[in-house]
Length: 338
Image 1 (tube, rainbow, N blue to C red):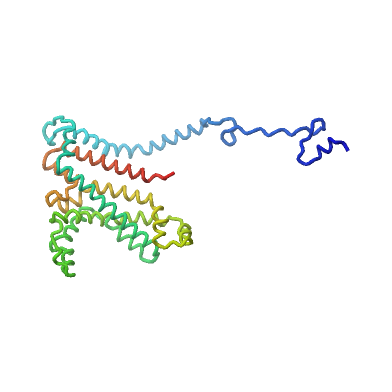
Image 2: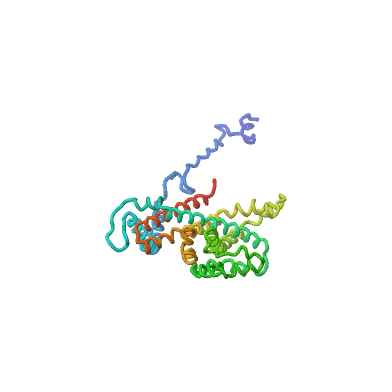
C-alpha cells in the first residue's frame, strides 16, 4: 500500500502536496468593524450620523416653545432678581450699587440666618417623616391586597391636592384654643396639656411642621406604593426560601428596590420644605416672634414691609442656590452604583 495514501486517508490528517487534493485554504480572520461592514472599524456611518443629527434638531424644535416660556417666566426673572440683589433699592426710588453687601446681611443678620435654619429644619417634617410613614403604609397596603384600598389611597393623597391656603386655615382652627385638638385632649383627661399651640414659642414650630408632614405623606405613599408594585415577586420568594420574615423582606428586598422612588420623593419634599410659604404665612405669619419665620415669609416682609428689595432678592438667590445644591446631591445619590 502506498504510504502517502495511508497518510491521506488518516482522519484529521492534512493532505500532503502532490496527492491532487491540496491543502484546504485557511480561514481569513475577520477584520474588526460593524457587522456586515468589514474593514470599517471605528468609522461612523455618515447616513446614521445625519439621521441622528436631524432627530436632535426635531427634538429641539419640540422643546423650543416650552423652553421659551420657561425662560420668559422663570429664568429671566430669576436673573433679574440676582441683578437687583447687588443694589440697595427700596422698590420705588433710585437704586445704588453696593456689591455683596446684601449677601453679607443674609449670612450675618440673625433674623435672616434664623429663617434659613428654620427652612432646613422643616426637611425633617416635610421629607424624613413623610418618607418613613409612607414606606410603612405602602408596605402594609401592598402586603394586604383587599377591597377598599382605592379609598385608602384617595384619602391619603387628598391633602396633596388641597390648596395650601385652605390647609393653613383649617389647621389654624384645629390648633385654636377652643379647637378640636384641645377639646379632644380635655375629653381624654389631658386638659393640662392644652395650650394655644400656634402662640407658644416652643410648640408653634413643630405644630406647623406637622402640617407639612400631613400634606406630604400622601405623595410619598403613592410614589412608594407604585415602586413596591413593580418589584419582581421572585425576589420575595427567594427571600422566603432563605427563611426571611416580613421585616427582613422589607429591609433586604423592598427598601433597596425603592431607591429611585425614595430619591424622587425626597427631591419633591425637600423643595417644598425649603420653599414653604403658604402654610406658614396663613397659620403664624412667622410668629410668635420669629420662631416660625422661613425665607419665603422673610422675602415677602423685606419686600413689602421693610422696603429692602435688594436684601430680599439676595435671600431669594441664596435660597434658590441651596435648593439646587440639595437636589443635585440627591440626584447624584440616585445614580446606579457600579
